[in-house]
Image 1 (cartoon, rainbow, N blue to C red):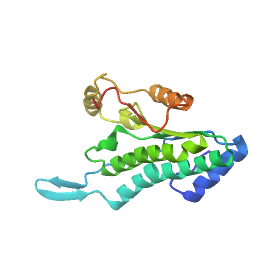
Image 2: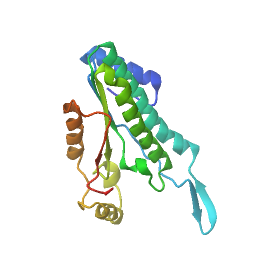
Image 3: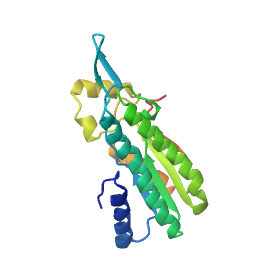
Length: 195
């Protein structure tokens, strides 16, 4: 099943198709995300040379935050309608605390963390849990595409001196799904980067 997570009608139709084909929804992992990095105001030699565009801002907010809202709303609707309970796992980021050149990304991921805790409170009465993972640096296509010196600089900042694997991230998702008492928390999975 695929859809544009920022398109409300498309998301609703996608969730309807999932239910028709697979039955009631019992879990959701909100992991769609993009980067459109840029300094709020870029200055070189005392001159303003660029600014973060509204388009860069909006693309990231639409996918990384609005998409989480739309998918979370549809999943929760299904779980409540079917009285099935369930779990929503949102992928936030350690960048939610702020990262130079990522105003849009940090704002979106901070919003995801806030949605997570809010939903945990709102949805608990329906036996729906909400939790998040805030990954650090993981071996993704984006990280793999970095120049070797940039990759080394990022990796050396992690106390474990390596990036995380996709398998380690999947294990954390599985932990949240399988642990029926885990809700309302953001699990930082960053190799000690934010110590």
